[in-house]
Amino acid sequence: MSDPVVEPGPSAPKDVAPPSKGAISKDVSIQKNLVSLATEADSLIIRLNKLIASPGGVSALLSTSNYALYLIAHLQTKAPSLSHLSQLFLHTLNYKRALPPSKPPPPTPSTIAAVSPILALASLISKTRSNLRLLGLPSLYAALRALLSTRLTSTDDALSHRLSLVSCLGYFAFQLLENVYVLVEAGVLPASLLARVFRDGKGAKMDAGKVILWSCRAWLVGVVGELLRVGRGAVLAQRRRKAEGGGKGEGEEDARADVERLRVQVEEDARLWREAIVPLSWLPVAVHYSLEGGLPGMNLGVMGFCGMIAGLGKTQALWKATKG
Image (cartoon, rainbow, N blue to C red):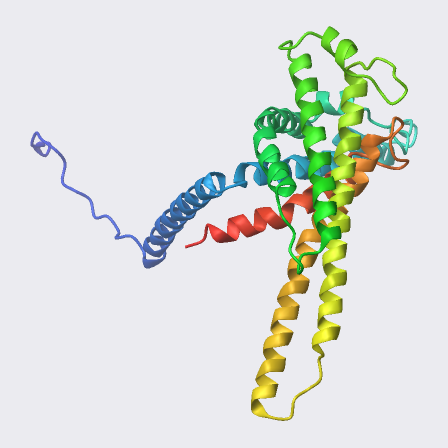
């Protein structure tokens, strides 16, 4: 018999099984997830842009991020390292292997910065914030000028006005001294300017370290003044409520008035708390930097937590405003 003749050209197509319904639904699900992820990313970027463009948005975002990173970096140093865990595991397998020390040596800022990109990023954000605050003096001057030119009426509280003035003066002095320190450290101003112009309370010449110390003390004055102003506002609110009376009315109109009065009081209490939480959170940090030896027990984690809480409320409010 002769061999079968093989015609040139492509071979006949083989039967291919159609894709299963499960594979099709899986592909559709992946595509939907990718589209949803892209949509969420687009919405996040747009909202972030709105936050940055809003008044005070950059300052609030950088401050909250800065101190949140400080807190994360501190927690990172407290977590057991992979090498420490591996040594413990090897010790369980081989009892002759030396057991690693239960407490590693305490980390220093230099060692943390060397091994922690998180702290390096936090330090970068901190320097960025200091540079941006170079432009903060005009707004503080405008606020100070407005307070000095305000004429109080019979309904205004003189003590609240004085506390606002003290707080603004403290913030202005802080910003002025910090600007000088930043410009000297950057080489824009000569270091000899500090010795010629600035002197401490004892009349001694001040170096860069003394200038930043006194700037933090001025910041403390601003924080305390702001906290006292909010406390004064709470006292005045309580006095006003007692004068207005809070008895329950018998008629329908009186009931509606009581409900409206209660709603106003709740909103006022929430506003006072939002205003109070900022200086309350900054107070331990300001006291720490105002003392030459710092506060006992203050570390990067406590400072990060306080700073994050101080800026979190404003950042959340600005972020909420970007929705829609």
